[in-house]
Length: 270
Ligand code: G3P
Ligand code: CA
Ligand code: CA
Image (cartoon, rainbow, N blue to C red):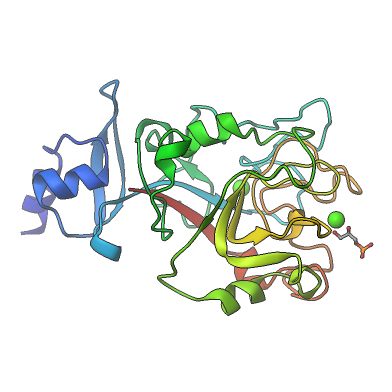
């Protein structure tokens, strides 16, 4: 029965959902306990059904208040304003701080020890074996490519990896972002550490790759960031940096759709 299954889960010792799948033959989505290299135990959601399963939820990025510009809740950029003397912002892309809850992951920021503890090959719905070459997780990747104001210029973007869609497609991805932007990115990729035309760094462009030698207004379609966004500061500073430039959820000019503005971006490893 149900309780029996949960009791059983508490006895598993594994470092990732992939290991739970392989070692204990679990095929059910749900919460499982994982054990870190240090012996710490935490609980997280395992997706055991998508594309063979074994996916560990390690983080989520959510914009709790589009009108707050690098204020409380902007954990993936800065909670202390837009400030060139605080170029890394909160620094959570490359540190070992954890926050949030598994149940709250779709409605608030979330980061668990798996983010830095699991050494993975793939990420989320993007089934490509690219993490290995960047150190096995995002924690290592963002040490190589700091999410830091002034770390580089437009064109010093980090890796862009082709994605495979489980849901949606190239056209639905294009439509999430403002019409003024649709000729400056190419859908079908996940891109790390983009930099805009005034040297503000972001962390992830979910679903697109900025095209080199275009305007590089990545603040309207990439998420997370360092501690300073110079253009009309602090107007573009935040976890979903400038998704609201021409109004909240309007999907006109530079503004994103309401759908993507209100989404949580869930990051899984395998
Ligand atoms: O990212 C958009 C900004 O750089 C230009 O905005 O309002 O002058 O068209 P605007
Ligand atoms: Ca947030
Ligand atoms: Ca701009």
